[in-house]
Length: 367
Image (tube, rainbow, N blue to C red; front, side):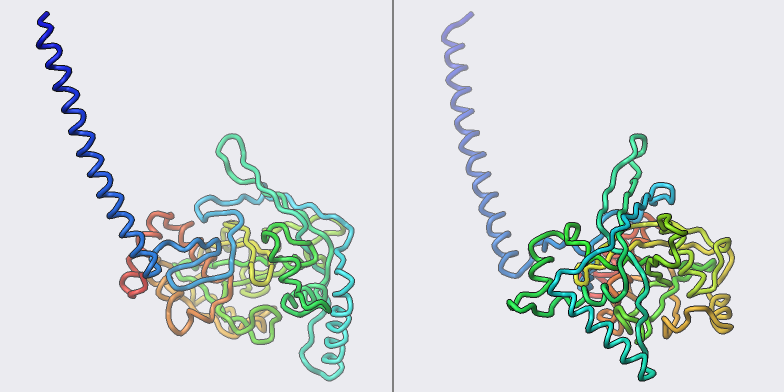
């Protein structure tokens, strides 16, 4: 072996390594500089992604936190376990007089022949856990409830009313923690909502009456029903959320259980009002949009809860345009947009829905 050639090779290799190091160091510095300038420009014009936990679609924002569910995987009826603790919720001492005021006001309205709310027995959410099955990782949900009533709910909804010390329930009980961990007396509402898809592929959209207690006059789901201790608990047994939604569908749309296929898509919390809910989709077997209009004209049990029924083609682009239309963008209930979006995902798949929604947002100049 020629020693001189070996030494020359080592020297040459060292020089090449030095040159490459200098080259790549300059290259990396240049790339970091470019990235830094790009980030600074994004920050300057507000272009960095905003960290938002609640549902949003382009400029449409809803105070709705999807706690469990993505639209693609159904939460089976057998996978939802509801446990009822029989000790009722208790309001903080400072809020008890507020409840007395609610009761007195409803009695005054009733005596005067005005629209008044009945103090129906309902439930408060005191616990919520999710686990996964070992085989396919499908969700299994445990929901814990405690007895409450509607007047307690109306009292707890006064989240921005001041206590004697100047604080509010929102500041004292909501701000310091997450929506999942607030005291149960603030969780005195659990509603089920459904997106109904007709046999001719139309989405049923309803406008809430101005006489309902929550989000009156807004455009919302096809049907909704609050969890009731009187109607949904058989004696002292725990309620079945699927049955609650079935009751809402027959009472508000006059559709019987045998006429559709029902799926649970998600559990949610309205973070502005601290209201829990479950989102469903129902695919009708044979009934068309015209059939539903015909049935509604002949009367339904809870027709008064909605002022108008409309239909939209159940495809991504038409639904996105409907959600973002100037006439409705600021008139949606918190549940409508996330429910309809998850229902689209259930039928068409997440990848397809996201691609088509992005195209429609660009077409509308909103992205």
